[in-house]
Length: 181
Image 1 (tube, rainbow, N blue to C red):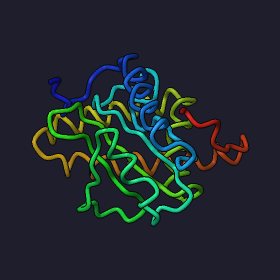
Image 2: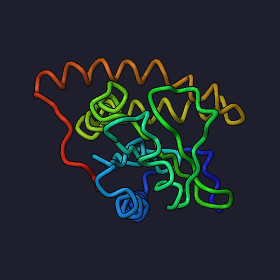
Image 3: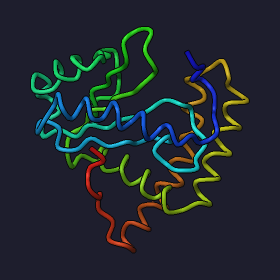
């Protein structure tokens, strides 16, 4: 299996991988998933990224995991109960399968909207996209063996970009487009 703890050049196959997984999730979840979106760096054409597919599933009520947990698990993912982020439910692939992160968030929540805004902003702003990629490469070279420090290290640039995205969202009247799946 491919080493996924690295920053790889953009690969157009990432969209196909999302489509394959997203379709299975859509078939299993039906209308329980208000949205299923390809998010994270692999969703941004041209952006170097860890080759891990991130999928955001938006549901009406996050706390009603009985409406979606078993359906997501039927598609080959398991809930990670130790997730400290209370704004989402986090699912991962079964052992031996390709690394995939599934983030279930409540429709309209700050966390759901922030994720979509960050993605959409970077899709439209190549200079910030390049700056983000450069910072990820720099952090990976510093923290190759420390995932926590790598993730924490991205915080400042992410928040700087989000501040710009916020201004941009007001200028253009941004709202999330159609769901990817």
